[in-house]
Image (cartoon, rainbow, N blue to C red; front, side):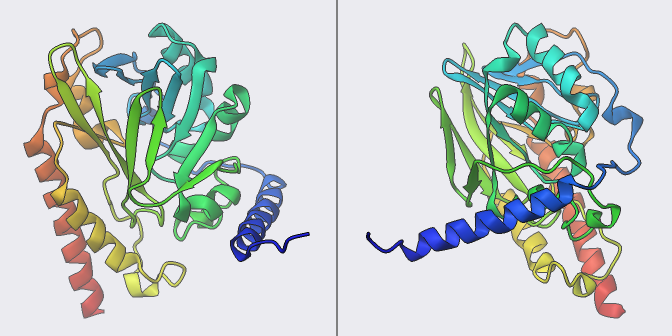
Length: 297
């Protein structure tokens, strides 16, 4: 019998650790922290551009990308959002069971709440930034900030761990994952192209690096690279070129100013470089002010 490669031992060891963490977390009650009413408020699904659709709630953005080989769902909202997402997908004329790949912009309960349930129901493959694996296994309990709330979403095992620049491929779609840490250790954005009848659109689903901890960065011992990660993500986002940009929350990219329920299909409404630049500028200011405040303490 040939000896097992070293990397295989590492893979098995990591899988075993995550499995143990998942079992431990599953045994505990899942309890979502206090939430915003707009996170559960229904919102009519609509076509953004080409084969890209919005299927989220009023504020928790969830996206469906359709292909001839099945569909890709990005983010799942709270645990109670399963039926809303299913209803939205079916209202657009697609089958919930055709969901083949699940992605998330960040491992927080407001985007991961329904992930385990949807994965179990559709048998879709879950692919996440590799830095989120432990948080998924613990149901959010190992998160450097929100872990204080305990298990906030049902633990779930990813089928593929992604590194910065990796491509997710299905039915002719190629989605590049961009590692944008800070908000969580494995926060990420997605970059891809959709084809409208008139023109192609380069789409960025940006995971905006808002700061959620009140502690000085140097005091966040569970995440020693948090300050440099935020700095990296801000600089990375500034360099991306796109036509349309979206985000993890509807309010972050002014969805309700750009689209009203029942509005006609209009991809151009989401072409908003100035809005993106303003959002990044505001986050850069927030980061700079926190760094200054931390240095003074």
